[in-house]
Amino acid sequence: MRSILLAVGLVALAGCMKKIPGTEIDDTSDSRAILDVMTAYRSAVEQRNAQAIIDLADPAFRDDGGSSGPDDDLDYSTLYTSLATRFQRIEDVRLDMNVRRMEFDDATNAARVTYTYTLSFKMPTLSGRTQTDTDIKQMLLKRSDESNGKARWRIVSGI
Image 1 (tube, rainbow, N blue to C red):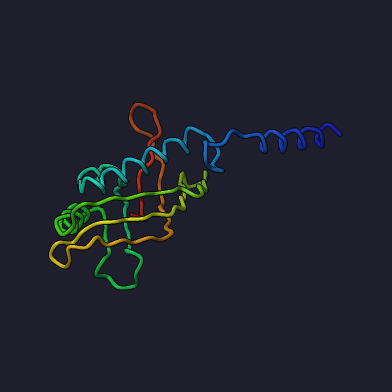
Image 2 (image 1 turned 180 degrees about the vertical axis):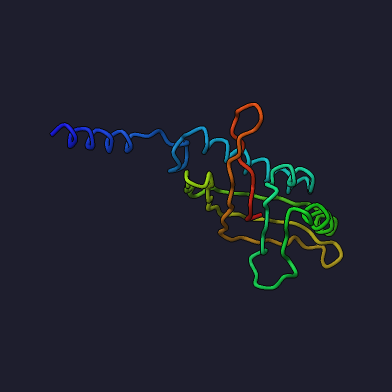
């Protein structure tokens, strides 16, 4: 009987977990830290700052660019050069992101973040018109413990 009451109590408490305002995401230190990474990523893209994105990336970073061809693949060692080249071709960048879901895997210290985005930019060499891209994406992040004992989340893929 005690275990049934305990289980019911735990389920009730889980249902009462505080949510981040405007989302269905549990308000935890990890979810807040990941949202901070997402905000820093958005800012770095808008500033076309390749180094700031590298600072958010994990050394294990790999991204296939959403295609099967290798032309748009990125890894940690080529990230700076690839991003700097891409950023040189665009201007007036605006990135809006809306995090929809966070899934945590405590066994691997990883998180999968599903988000929608709208990216608008100009490519002056192709057109004076603003280009827009909207889609749903996933970003994978890995938690690592820093020397000061504080956990830090880093991007593994999904930029």
